[in-house]
Length: 227
Image (cartoon, rainbow, N blue to C red):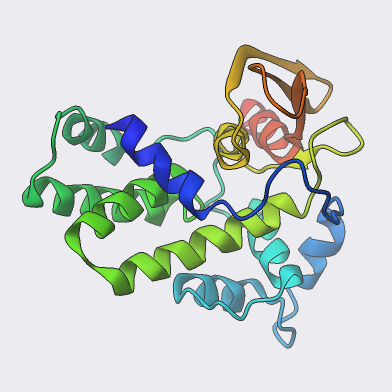
């Protein structure tokens, strides 16, 4: 089941790692200020509403403020786990999913996305189920939401060094990016300052590993320990 669902990530991947692209690390202080301005197109509540409605006209700046701005939301909890995750795993353990199972997957992941609207695994499972169910309208909506998130992630770096690190607000997004870029995890993860470094399995790009800035995750953990 997992192997089948991973295909969804690859199918919507629109950027080969062998290509160069423009990127800029997020300025969290600037983002925090911008998303509080109710008169701005970057006001966070407006951005989230547009995301939930799968607005494909969002600019890259808006996508970046949506994704990285979520770290300032009171519901941001990078190390929490949804109670519906266990229920979802039970369904996914089946060799083959029937129509009722597919509905359960969509329902469980909908609940998970209420806790974390940027859960790429949940969206990916939905893509598989919705495609099997023939729900093209909702499928296309989820593809748009996934692209919004991935666009923001890909705009932050290329992962080749600390200075060019990808910026993520969830450590799970590190592994999601590996799949999207066509890489396989090499088996070793290490925390270097505020960067996660993941080794890669042998690949055509001849990269040994990728760097990910996880500052929001570490800040959140530090805050929890102080409470």
